[in-house]
Image (tube, rainbow, N blue to C red; front, side, top):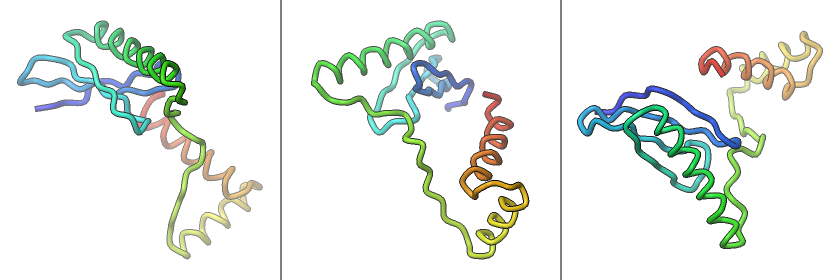
Length: 118
């Protein structure tokens, strides 16, 4: 059984750390890239160190291969909605004196901060 316990960031990468109750370990994975990077530890401090080591090893490995490491996020977020919601978003953005992108960035960022506390 796994339970989420913490999120960590390092060099722009984010990891989710879960407790594997059955195995008695912390299991981590980097969330925001296509490549699969996982690590495990017994303590939070050890998990933080293993996460940082994993990122550093990944970056060194990519450099050794002469490849660009997968970047956490591009800054582009495709978004689809209904025509009626599109209209509402447009009106809300105009009332705020902003473009749709600027308004959505502000609203979504504030909502994400409330949920993630980061």
